[in-house]
Image 1 (cartoon, rainbow, N blue to C red):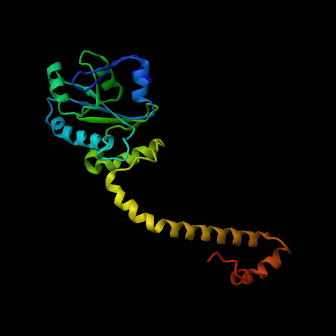
Image 2: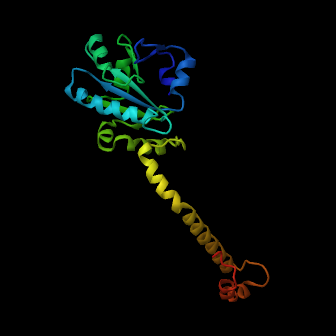
Image 3: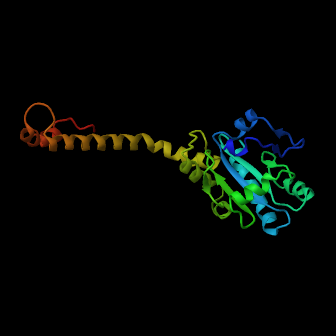
Length: 227
């Protein structure tokens, strides 16, 4: 991910439009992150319509008001606007935490060609190693909302055990009551399976394979059951 923007300047979408222009800053912001490249133009009505959905999607995954811990996610706007004024206007519709490339940076068009952007809007989702995870996630975001981020986490093996959407808290609490019982049930079943395998293979201490099989019923009734 860092290599893709190693010698570039990324700009924060805040009031001062602070620049990330050193290798260290780029590494700290992008390393071990899932990156969404948002290709759009304010002149397209479809982009205008999608922008609020994308903003809400990103904010719900990076704002601690919505999540237990911010997601490992970066949103980078790649402007295909016809003027810098159009770009500045469209940035007002996007989250303050997102990044963008300056309008005068020709790398915008290089990225457009690199990822074969043929329609707007397009959201290219990249793994931390810069490989493409989703060529265009617009439809997935519209259909699944923040839930699709879990699929991205699993696909990239970028699992943050502390990440949880607040809407899942209640479900987790309900499960917690039954978890100890289920864990004991699975443990008992595993022990039974292992014991059966040992009997079939003639393992089990004292006596040959035939004697072990013959004593199976006594084991079941002789108080060794974990129940």
